[in-house]
Image 1: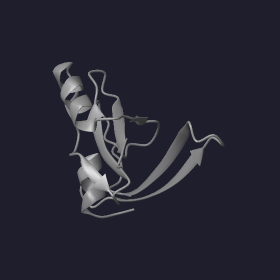
Image 2 (image 1 turned 60 degrees about the vertical axis):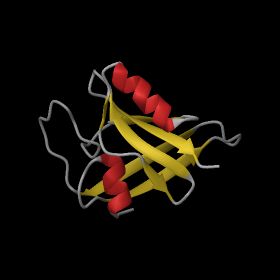
Image 3 (image 1 turned 30 degrees about the vertical axis):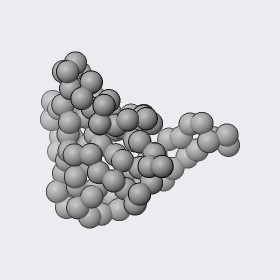
Length: 110
């Protein structure tokens, strides 16, 4: 994946990455694995970016992404990039919680 939309979701520039989606047979849970080709990750960052090697974020499906973002910002979270529409299937954004963990929010577009 690459392009302005993914740059806006993860808060980085010139992103190029590949991903694989693993989903349970009932469709109730999935795991997304992402490999960033660019930009490359940096070591010794206290607040790691989305492309830093290792487990850096957890994704949650939400019903109203704008409301969830507003609510978690009141509790100390910060939005990493911007809310983006991915191919009219999901609205996506990354937020960083107070502990520095990146959470991806995904709202299915109806």
